[in-house]
Image 1 (cartoon, one colour):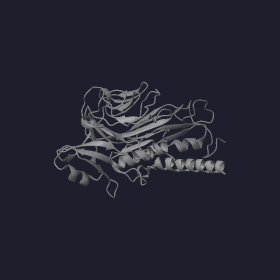
Image 2 (image 1 turned 180 degrees about the vertical axis):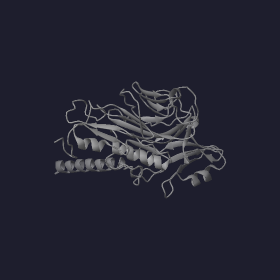
Image 3 (image 1 turned 90 degrees about the vertical axis):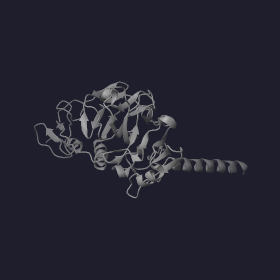
Image 4 (image 1 turned 45 degrees about the horizontal axis):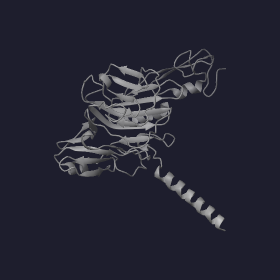
Length: 345
């Protein structure tokens, strides 16, 4: 009897531990960013509400006049509650002590004192594209104190950010606990992942925030996107460990710029999910829409990688070519009669 009772207690304890552990890390679908439950985020930070399921606040702020802290949430429309923020701050300055993770994983970013980014200056909210944003000077950054969580491929990182200067210094917007970065590094659009994937001469905007997406598949070539347009990129592969802002990470190289939101995924965003997310961000932040015109190739006899980027590497299935196409793209097929969901006949 005692043995059976001990077994019952052990079983009940394990059951309760499992239930409450799963409850504590319940995943939030980022439906307000046009994503579904099949694309869970590892982290999600934004000054707007990203998930209907998320019930927490956006940020915790510190008022400069007396260092009082206050959590700031969202309006009924899902925007940052700027009325509450301005009432709290008055004509003072205000800094972000904590940026809450909306993914459901509880990976909040935080810091103290002089390294806290600003959201209000002399009573005026920092804005880009008419939306609130976090201003990181060269000494600011927010960090996650827990264990690394982006340690294997595939992975994807998406952010909405911009620059405040044309300084040709080493500047990082998002960086990892490992040497991994996205930023206006040397005043160039830069992505480093265990090697430079690109350092593109067109600098980040100093008047608006832009959408940037970097994708590292497990075996396929890495891709980089800027406001929905593919960027020429190398194929260095590296993992950030965890993603943080500004000076927080492998190197204390600050941003001097703005971050409005950023997301991390332990998965390779497919074309549909990436475009859905970026279309949502373009609409919310009022970016000009840029139509991509990608050429996609289909040839049953192709023997290359099968990614559709050239005749050598063409898709061998017509339906795969159709599935890969987005608005404005063109699908080219080799000689023959093709049908959707079949080969050539």
